[in-house]
Image (cartoon, rainbow, N blue to C red; front, side, top):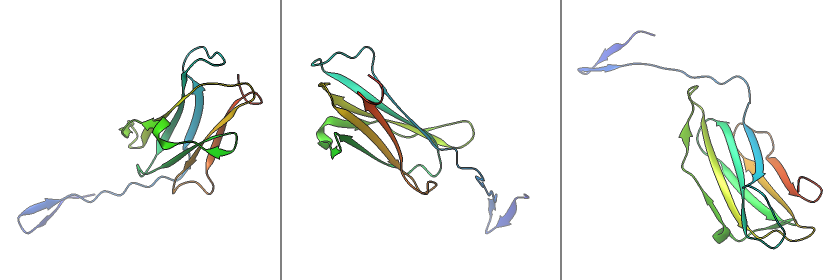
Length: 121
């Protein structure tokens, strides 16, 4: 595209089109996990555009208290997409199952990943 002069300023028109939906979500524990010992779950979301995402956590199907959740800022990738990590502080108990769900405009339905007895302890 060619720059165009407009009121003494140069406008550069740029159109970015993302044809494929490659948004991904991974959920994993922070190091070795032992029952009854406080730890952190990480939900890594990658290849987002635009950088707006809604991340929710559940424990045994119920939303967790937001005071237990934190997240990074959005970081840019070299392809102009973005990534973010959400953290859940938790103390693993026998039979608990955790989930991280990611809702984004590029997804037809939220991406959900599970961690726990039936998933990955």
